[in-house]
Image (cartoon, rainbow, N blue to C red; front, top):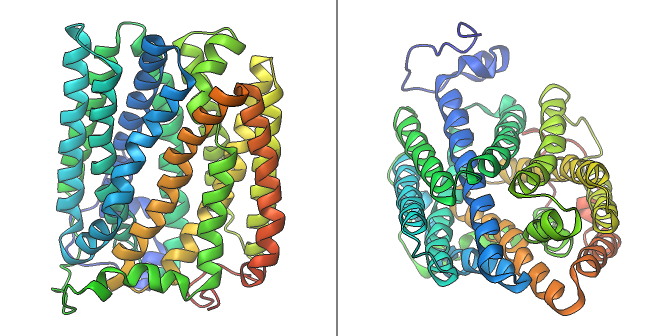
Length: 427
């Protein structure tokens, strides 16, 4: 195993397309470093999420406060959307990522210290989670824009699937590890997350990419808004991104998992960790499959079908009172979401020139953040008003309605066939 993961000698230039197509992704040093850094980062973020969710619910017993955790992360992303994309297009993306990891580590250390000293409050958690949201606002577009520069276009789809598998492997390990470590105390979970953020920063520092030429485009108001204008000019991209936004905004039940774990399924922090991991188990299995069996055609129709399965699985999870069935429903949900993620990310990357990837990725990140963090707030708010089960079930049904509506609003997305550089998404 050690020999299989040995990294080749550093190289400051990208492999040629023919070499990249024939070589394994494991032979491309910068991509491997990126992969492991991504794993460390996501494991740390998931440990943080489990600890914060359980601790907030212990402190407040409030579904609304669980939703406010998502809102605290979303608001900085929304406020910074026009800034972070421009930064990712004008400055060294590796240095941006390293700085973000340092800020995340400091926030985790602050949570650990306050928990260890018994001075932690929900208001302190919201403030530090807002700092986490700001760091992630800069991290996501820089990270998405960096990846295409590590591999050549012929293997980009495979690299995206492999990168997604890293995310899902971390989504499995992170929540389970966070739930187990939390038993010893929240300070230990936060401390472990801080250490992993530092590891991720160190790995990113070892990545070598071809130096990016200095941007010639002046920093004008038009250039700042260019990412939004670019997406609006391509209905297939707009449809794919907005479909994910509304599907997860309505169907996301992540914020309510502490309630399901403790009050509905009768488990502890370990059960919460397993529930969060179940989604990633299904997503990882699908990501591995897609890495070896890329989607060859009818990508648009497959995306709509996957989102419909996502909505149906959400309904099953919402109604379940049996832990194995709940975990299985989340696994199916994760597998369906992974198909949508790979198709959406590939459409964005192959249809966007490198000089604009940061700004387009920033807009994409806000849509993702809206569906995840704002979706958590929406789930917490509706659960406080109508009840936890009703909130999840109605959200799943709403996702199915969105699928039918989007198929009529974005016919160009329905017609998307292949996912490669020779067949870019239609305008």
